Amino acid sequence: MRYFLIAMLWMLICAAPAVTSESAGVGQAGNIVMDGYRQFIDSCAFCHGVDGKGQGEAVNMLSAQPTNLRLLSKNNDGVFPLEYLYYSIDGRDDLTAHGSGEMPEWGDLWERGVPPEFSQAYVRSRIFQIIMYLNSIQE
Image (cartoon, rainbow, N blue to C red):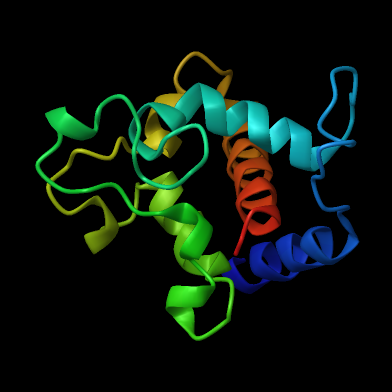
């Protein structure tokens, strides 16, 4: 199952258009990267900053500096760390990414209030959207 998720996400990354100032306009319904941007703003920007550089509004309240998400590939020998990101965002597996526990376990939070038969698909789609957006902003 793990490899299926990774293969599916990789196919989406390869097929998705990059976000540009022209494509980032309002009304881009259906654009998975823009959907990911909206998910990012909703769930990640408070700590990681609107620009993803790790300088969100909460930075002074945290014991650890949030990761600069624009440098994920650069800091991983030029390889986008897709599997690591998936499990880091989900947070339900025991990963050191959640270290002090300051990063929410989004998988657990997002599945609450969603009927059980749809919860995993819902969580995966939110994670995939965020990953697609993060891939598009790598420096």
